[in-house]
Length: 152
Image (cartoon, rainbow, N blue to C red):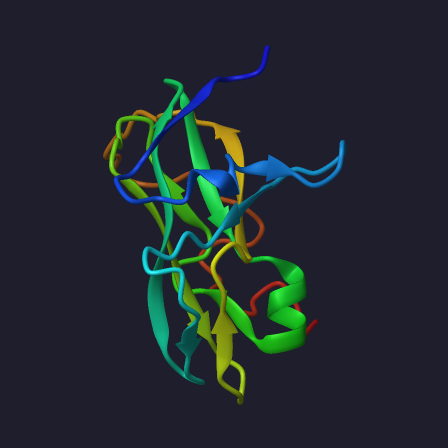
């Protein structure tokens, strides 16, 4: 059974851009578009970040989350990623759906109204119980930190 993700338009949003959409039948992520209020291009300077609106508010089915992830083509070609990848949206959030784009490339990047800027993946959520214990069960790795499982 597919979870239901509900959306509502923000005031002034360009509704002609439509809802998030899967590009192919096998896609795990649905594309999110830049919904720029003034419809003007936005320049994302090298080394900077900006919050881009999608024009949408979101309601996620209980026991699910939405993860916001970078688009691989933008990352490879232009160095455009997300400042908090993956971003998590909880099922009890009802606010605007915004994307924090980060330009780690060496050139400025232009975001145009309607551009596909990120993707959202719907995932089930399990909440854990937490317990304080006197000692942890041993493993072969033990308390070895970063790089403790080998060189490469």
